[in-house]
Each structure stands twice: as structure tokens, then as C-alpha cells.
Length: 265
Image (cartoon, rainbow, N blue to C red; front, side, top):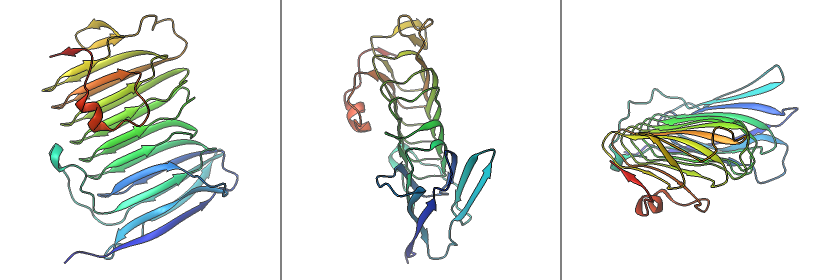
């Protein structure tokens, strides 16, 4: 007999917060994060599902040196997850969280087996560390970001990362999957160095990058560029694609169907 799914409504007041660390663990569930669309004085709002035999999520707020740390932890003992690519994303519950776009935020997000989707467009983000044991990973970074440090990792699903327009400073993006495809979108106007590898799949890198060695590609003028991004993209078994000049919010399936411009074995 299926367990009943209940919902907890999150509403965290903004207070005096100007910077925040948001640390979320959904256990086996799916997670979606985006921006607050209303002007309410909130740090975060959302809906957190849980099963009737579980306790409510653990919810804590701490302030240290001017930074607010919001921690959300799903209850329950969970279960070990490993999915083959066609099995990815079978989390039992879903958390939808909306964050204040005006607060400089560091995001840490974890699921043991569900899908993780972070649409951070229009937000003020300093760093992202997101992982799932077996679901799909979909990450959209904000425009006008600077000096980002980003990790997006899945054990078996697909991983898609979209770097925002007008990204400035020195940025790092690490995207990986144990078995699924990995796709990274790069604005054509930002200099990039790409380290791309796959154990069993194909590596496809946009032709605007010069090949430096077997696994490294680089924009002309990268070394002297003030604004740049260093990308590490890898998969154990899937294809790895790094491309430019793509419209925002392209689906992972479309990327895979239109894989690109340069192929290496």
C-alpha cells in the first residue's frame, strides 16, 4: 500500500540577512530551487513533501559573522541508491524551494537518488555544490555572476549546466556523471578552458575552442583574459558535450539529439 504524501509549507523571514548559506538534504527525494517571484520579506519559501510515516524536516537558522545559515534536512533513514541511466530520478517526494534573489547565497544541495533542478537565473549566487546519487542534475547559473565556484555531480543520471551571460572574474565549473551524459553551455563571449573526458562515450567540444592536448580545449586569448571560466566535464560512460551560442533553457534531450561540432573518441 502506497504511503500518503504530506506537505510542509516553508516560510523563512528575511530579517536582516544580506548573505546566506542554504544547505539542503532531501534524502531520497527530488529537489527544485528557483527565485522568489513575490516581494515578500522572506529569505526562503516553498513546499516540502514527506511521507506519513516520517517526521517533519529538520529546519534550523543560525547567524554567524553576519551570514545566515539555513539548513533543511529530510527525516527518515533513507535507503542506498544506484540507478542505471534509464532508471534515474525515481525520488518519492519533491521539495520546491524559492530563495530571495537579492541575498548573496551559497547553495549546497544533496539528494541520494532524486532529480536536482536549480534554476538560479536572476539570483545573487556566490557558489553552488549540488549532487545526487542517481537522478538527473539540471543547473542554470545567473547572468552577471562573478568568481563562481560550481560543482554539479550525479552518480548515474544526466548532468546539464548552463553558464550565465556576462559572467565575470575567474570562475570554475565542475560537471560530472558516473554513467549519464554531461552537457555544459558556455556563452560565446567568455573565455574558457575545457577539460573534457569520458570513459566509454564521445567527447564533443565546440569548434571555437583550440585543442591543447588530448583532453584540454581553450579559447584564443584565455591566458590573458580578465573574465574566464575553467570547466571540467566528465562522465564514466556517457557522452560529454561543451557548446556555445545556445539559447537559454535548452532541454537535455535536445542537446543530446543535436550533439555537436567536434568529436573525438
